[in-house]
Length: 137
Image 1: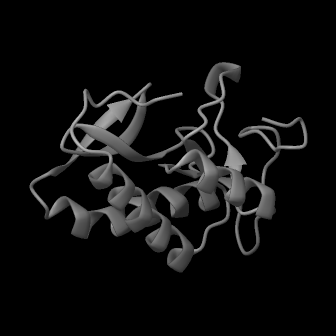
Image 2: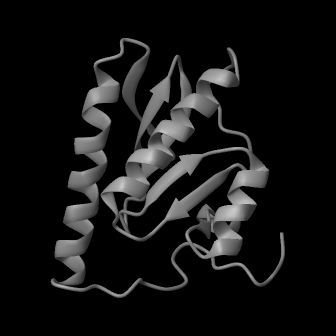
C-alpha cells in the first residue's frame, strides 16, 4: 500500500449544515437505516467487530460503522478498495495502524453511495463462500 493513501482518522471531512457531532449521528442513523432491509434476511445479523457495531452475512463480516468518526466501513475485494482509495471516495481502514487490505472507510455521507456500497459488500460476502467469520487483513 502506497504512502499517498489517506488513513482513517488522519483527517475529518468537511461538515456542511451541522456540527461534527450532528454529522456523526447522521452517519450512524443512515448506516442503520440502510441496514434495516438487509436485516430482514435471516442470514444477516448485527454483531461487533473489534468493538465496532457491524453486519455479518452467515457469520462473515461485511459492513461496519467506525465508532469514532462513524464512517461507513465495508469489506470488498482488495482491488476494489484500491480503486475507491485512489478515487478519493474511500480511505484505508487501519485500526491501530494495521492496514486491512480488503476493508475501506467511506467518510462522505451520501445515501446513494452508501446503499450501493453496502449492497456490494453483502454480495462480496455472499460470493466469498462459507468461512470462519473472521475478517482478513
